[in-house]
Image 1: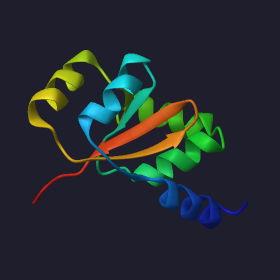
Image 2: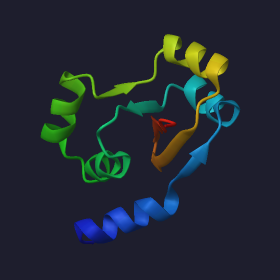
Image 3: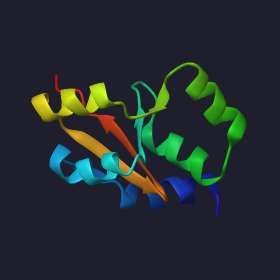
Length: 99
């Protein structure tokens, strides 16, 4: 599968998720936060192809990290708009910034 086909597939499988729906995944420890300005689908594609160097760079710079208890508390209070995509077993999420 080409990179563009992979991105199209991931885009079709991504969508909005509310915190109450995400909570059970957080409790399992499988929620990964993708910080803007990284593209959620590009990170998901890198994860799907197991691109360890790229993922390592993003993690080292704290742009891709497992969700923390503090983030969960913030999401519980703020109920932000979140976009998600699954790259089993992980659920990648990114806050949608409202302008």
